Image (cartoon, rainbow, N blue to C red):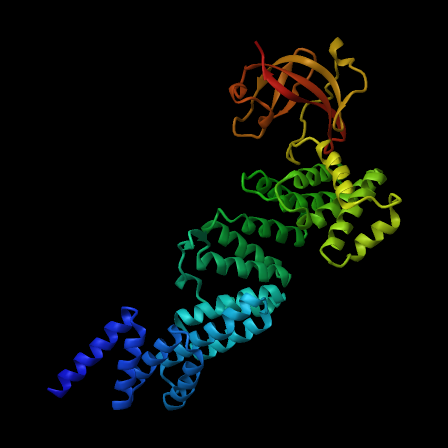
Length: 449
């Protein structure tokens, strides 16, 4: 009979705990523990105190239980969660990543596996990222088995969050890249992209690693392919601009800067893009605009109380800065005018025709320009030529030009995106930097009657 009473009492206490009636469960498990001390009753008391937010009592009880049952996994797990509640979470909220990391380490000591350890590992990964402790970040990744992590996205407060597995790959690839282990990073990035193709960072790191391994041309090709993706971010254009500048292709690099600058994103986040733009413009002997871009990067950094990199300081000393210095708003306005003056074709879309020379009277339109492209003719007529309907560009066989005229697919009205479609357009001068010669591009394309 006594055993039956014990069973019923334990069941009542456990039902209360599982049902969220924590005060009731705590009283019952405390009575149980005082009657017959056990690790099972002990960790349940600790659980109730923690969930009730009675952390001081939980810490006192936890220390006593750890001394009595030093090898009990459930008590260790509860102590780990207590560290999470009292150290890791508050440190994260306060932005104290050093304390957050110390708490994560303590959690991992208390529970060697399970959900508490996984939570500790990802807290440590987050903290090491903020602390730029890449070696330790990689070490935490190595302590996790990615195949054991959930591959399904999480939902929190109605927001869709990356899965644990995706987060693991992200952390590993980033750490490898920062540690300059480029061969390992490329392999990991390509493997991650197979599983999480929507996460373009993996493809980007693969291309950047290829560049660091000395294959710049292939890296440019991969980055250009990535930049065409509908979800590609502005910093892909920054990467392309930097690569093309290093490859001695400054005109193409400047077009990439303009596209990146026009894309969605906070101006303060683009300070390095603007600085690259200043370098390119100086190389193109557009020193006034170069100075404005260098000043924009510097003023944005000053506004955020960020330091000025040495290369930017050198640019500021070297370039003819306006005096008195304009306001940030005025400088940004001037730079926006420069970005708007560029066409928006992807960097690798080069005009392929041979020396398109004007033969019609419409070409004699004076020196009027659209951006940097001189207007050669207006109200030109022709028919669309498409070698590949999936390609982002095509050509127009025009009445006013001997050779096909280059056109971006995005500049073609949807109803004209088929071979033979009659169109009218404005022709502007373009430049094939790869072949070092001028060409013709169609803009303002409309369906011809």
